[in-house]
Image (cartoon, rainbow, N blue to C red; front, side):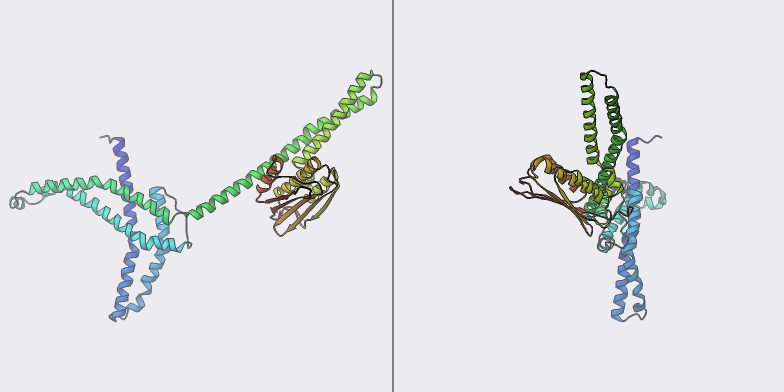
Length: 409
């Protein structure tokens, strides 16, 4: 006989729910038995009725304390195996939650589980009552008229009780899942902490990936397009030096192409340095900032106190901030006569301060350049501050978390 799929699924769920309830009775009621054992020994001690009671009392108390921790792992395996609910491994942590579940909530759930199993067994026995009566002797049946009516009523009540068992079992399983997750599961604060850690880790990975992508672009530009432009500029220079018998228009065109090729090379060099200069990886932030200060359009005083290297992502952000700040000085503060870049490391904090004596008036809320700087700084959990009153001076201060980069001396 083929069982309909819907009935098969219902029977499978009922079997799982009853097995889950049966597996929970013993671990839920063990603390109750230990408690009454200890209570009985205490009563004997108070009454003085047993000389062995004082020596035996540590046994139930020790077992009771042990069950507060040990039964948590039993319940964890029960939930994972039978319901697919993965509770965290608490170990010896969170004693209040473990004792609260195993000593207070568990016994109540154990009573409900015992009642459910008793109802299921009673329902089965009652439903078969109409069949049991035919197993009793004929003399008994002859002496008890109306037995078939009573057997039919009991069987009907048993079938009604069995009909209510699946819903009660499913409700009890849902209740235990809610209680188990709420008491033994991950708390809201732990969940938020875990999510913060995951987001921090994913953000750090995104920052590292973006930095690696900039390095790749820098290498591709340096080894590809830049080399082609250099080769083109050399060819045009050689043509200008050797082809002296060309008409003036042709020589002028070669001169113009040669000049534009050199300008393109210079712009590409600036772009490559802005993405990720090679000197930053090879010699560190101090050397990269020295080169940046030397190329700046305004005189720059660089003060650097870096006893050791920082993480590559932090060095890249510090360099990018200094580069963009000096570029902004050249673009938006033409009256500035000098600038100062100060880089210091205080413990695990790398502090970068860029100041100029321009007319000020820069507003981080306006324009995307300063907003981009602030976002770049926040990508590594740094802080960005800027002071630029009208009339100057303008001071940009950045503080970056600076864990030691052990791979670089």
